[in-house]
Length: 318
Ligand code: A3P
Image: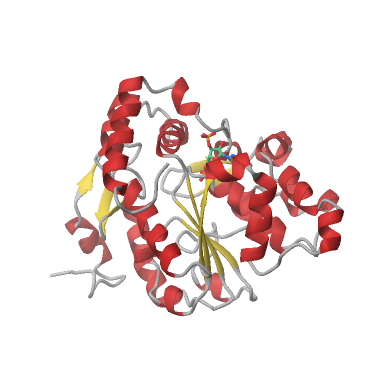
C-alpha cells in the first residue's frame, strides 16, 4: 500500500491514483494533505521535502494564486536589491516579476529543485504551498515568511478569469465556480485554511511571519513598502526617505507601470502539461472590489457567509 510516508519516484504514479480526484476547474485536481492541487505538483511537493534546505537567511513570499503574488514579488525584489540596481536600468523593466523570484515547488523551466540550493544567500523565494506543506525546518530555522492574502471575492473573481484564460477553450460558469470555491474546492484551496495557517503562525512568530493584505498595500502603498523593508531587515535610511525611495519602489512596481512594459505584454513560458503561461496573464485589472462587476448580491453574500463562518474566532477578517 502506497502512503505519503513511503512514496518514492517509483511508486509516485500509484500514489497519485489513490488520491481523491475532482474535476470542475480548467484541469482535474487531487486532494493532497487536505489541499487541492494539480496532480503533477504532488511529486514535486514530495521531492521538495528532501531537497529543499531552508536557510535562516531565506525570505519566502507565500501566497495563494491570484492574491497578488506578482506584485509582492516585484516589491520584495526591488526592496532587497535596491542598492544593486538603479530604477532606470532595473531587471523589472525587462523581466516579468514572476521569473525574478523562483517558486520552491515549481522549478523554472529547464531547472530542477537542486538549482535552489546553488543560489547564494540570502535567497528570495516564493511559494503557493500552505505552511503545513513546507519542510518543517522552514519554521525551525527561523527564515522569514511574508504572506499576502486578498479579499476572497476579489481573489475568486481573479481566479475565475485566470482559469478561463489559461486553458484554451475553458469556459467555466461563474456560478459553478463559486459553488466549488465555497466548498473549499479551488486550486491551493480551501482558501480560508491556507490563510488561517499563515495567520496563526504570524500571531505566534510575528518577527518571522508577516501577514499582509492586498487591499492594505493598495490603500497605503508607501507605508506597506516601508513595513516590508523593515521586516526584511533592510529599512530605509533617512537619506533614502528624503530622496523618495519608497515612492520610487511603489511606482516601479505599480500595476500601471508593469502593464505598460513590453515584457509584460508579450511572450510567456511553457510550463508543460499543456500549460503555456503568457506574461500578460498575471495582470488583469489590479483593483480592489472588481467582484462587484461580476458577482450578484446573492453570490457575494454566499461567499461572505462561508468565509465568515470559517474564519470565526480567528481574529482574521476581510
Ligand atoms: P485581478 O485579476 O483582480 O486583476 P497573482 O499574481 O497572485 O496571480 O495575482 C494576480 C492578481 O494581481 C490579478 O488581479 C492582477 O491583475 C493583480 N496584479 C498583478 N500585478 C499587480 C500590481 N503590480 N499591482 C496590483 N495588482 C496586481
